[in-house]
Image 1 (tube, helix red, strand yellow):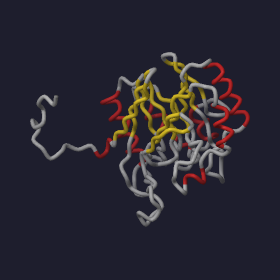
Image 2: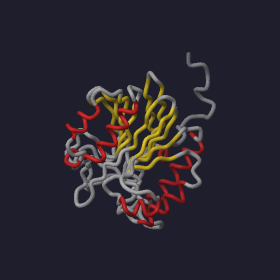
Image 3: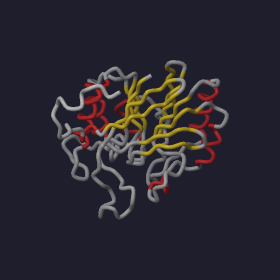
Image 4: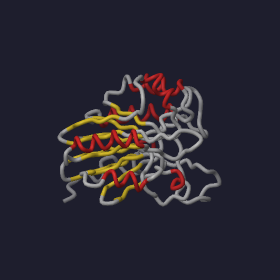
Length: 263
């Protein structure tokens, strides 16, 4: 199975800029690049912070843009999102979470939005009951989780303050199930590792990033390459390629150089 992971769009009203950058233009460029090079993907997951201020206009733009994107797309909410505004545009009710079964695997898309004034994540009893039911339904089959907030510290002093609350309780819910990988956003950084035996990965935002070291730049946010991930899932492997699509340029070399047999 091939899927695309995007996160932290931080869309504002069309025509507006955020921290000197154009989130709508960056999303447009990402979707065009994905359609050009990865139109065969089975699905695309966007793990939250779809909008910077949860504005209806931002969600309307997203819906219109996705209408001409050829890859089936699944959306989640982050701490910058507004559930009511999202539902006003995309429909439905309640929490924004759902499950998909593909190739004997269960893909679970979680809603970790707590709501203002907190930027931390919340996965309360009703949402946990839903997740417990989905894990039971998987009956030992591989499970892949998609969510905005990481349920563990990521070694970033600022972001560790606003991770998923009651991370220990969330971890306990996953025990005894074949959780293969967790894809999350929120971090605004390329991150990968293993937590309690579960692989995980995160990506930079499409707009602005968080410097790894506080004080490395004089501002809270930084301007570093945006990325999307191309993920291949097989029974024996989870392979994640991050692509800094806006920074892809030809090398300073002749076009016919290094085209011979390498082995």
